[in-house]
Length: 317
Image 1 (cartoon, rainbow, N blue to C red):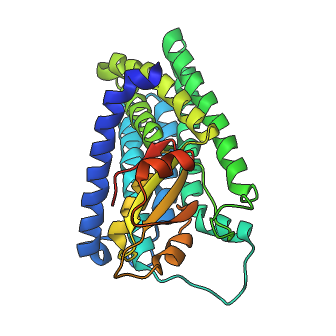
Image 2 (image 1 turned 180 degrees about the horizontal axis):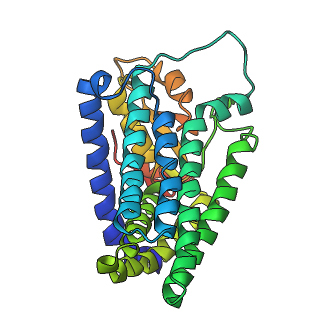
Image 3 (image 1 turned 30 degrees about the vertical axis):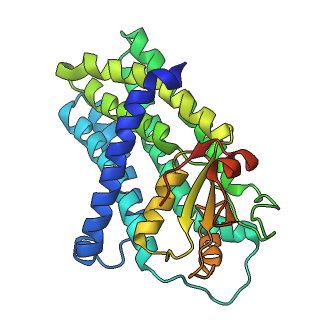
């Protein structure tokens, strides 16, 4: 019921988020080395924006309104920035190896650390701010209920994320028997929830927009619950690419967007007469991809979707 009610909002936000990703990645490919200081990583940006929780709590608890609200807005804005920088750096930085053979679990935790750290950092900022706001607005039970609901859901989401990050990978994750992994992701539901909740959090701090902020926090509670449910329930996404593709920033952006539609991504590589299948081995190394399937050139997508128990079919690359 809730998913149907929020579908127009989620669809619109998905298009906006895709545009932001495409535009930011294009700008970083052109000017990234001048915009991002040398040596600064996406995780550094995540750490910097999360550290704003300290001035936010200090200012808000001491009666300031606009300044802590601005801190919240800066945090949520740079949440998009660190994601864009992470995708850009992933596409431009060569992989490093010291020649040591890593276990599947070690390989997965190394590759997915950035995504895990970003998700936990979101919660490390939001939960203390919500608890502080709960104490400040003791005359508004509806607002307090929504703040506690968000804090509880995000706390549980943190547990689910951490459990997924440290769990052993599935022993049969690639069609050929090789190991890969699947990280639990928030998806577009979680991104929409995060934006509305943090925007509402900044609004409740300013008297002029307090009522609007309360409404945004109340409305985003069902989205928070839907996001956690999506993390628990496995949603398998299928995306298909031609075998003539090469792994570049455009393909990586497509893979990340496809993966955001669910909790597990299966990529099908369509055979052709004039190309080889080396892309299979390249895709297998991506932490975003759970499974890689070699698709005969005359196979029908609907048959594949039914045979692989696919929940969501992404647009063909």
